[in-house]
Length: 304
Image (spheres, rainbow, N blue to C red):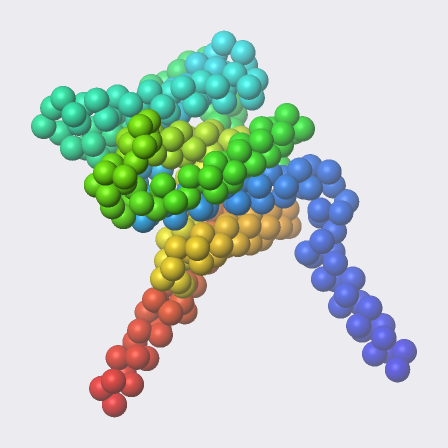
């Protein structure tokens, strides 16, 4: 009896040390977890709408486009989160507006103009940071450091997440209409609430979430927490509300598992979190109702 109790106690202690102790013992791990969970709640639902609007690659483009603004903020104020965040928001909105202007005034489609502009922006940002900082500064901005989130960074992420969730809830009906039937929305919309207003407001939410995520995941990785859970959720559910909830839960799970693996294996936190989100995506491809295995079994049952 005593040996059974000792084994049970030992297993419980091992599970505690593996799954809970890093967050219970270290404040930097708790800050990283709270920041990642908050970002998951706001960014993943935006990814669902990007996927719904067939704009999945837009998030990737904008995550690169914010780099010159972050670089200019770094050049002016060093590793000041406020300066880099403000520069990133301005750069992201400028690139989105410039891509729209080019598409309206030339024969290029918006995706083509956006691809060209974000590549130039990425090259410019890397050049600026490399010329005015160290290799470590460049790696920190490109790949982030969730374990290095301080109080000001946590406050920024929490503020952006709170505002984004409230704004998404308030604009939910308009965004759904604008995504499925912009002509109908234009016909019934009140003055000042035309489809382009919804689109620009939505793009602003995407940009500020990417900027909030660059400190924890880096400018190159922030989009991963936005898009991978969103794409995975489509394999599990057909209805939009269920996809929004599923995407948020998958993003939070990836953040939690990624931080644990990063701590225990001593790996970079940002790529590890995105790697966990990728593992959930591949598991969804295999096991979800819209994935390979259930569809293969259904085809086999129909032909049997």
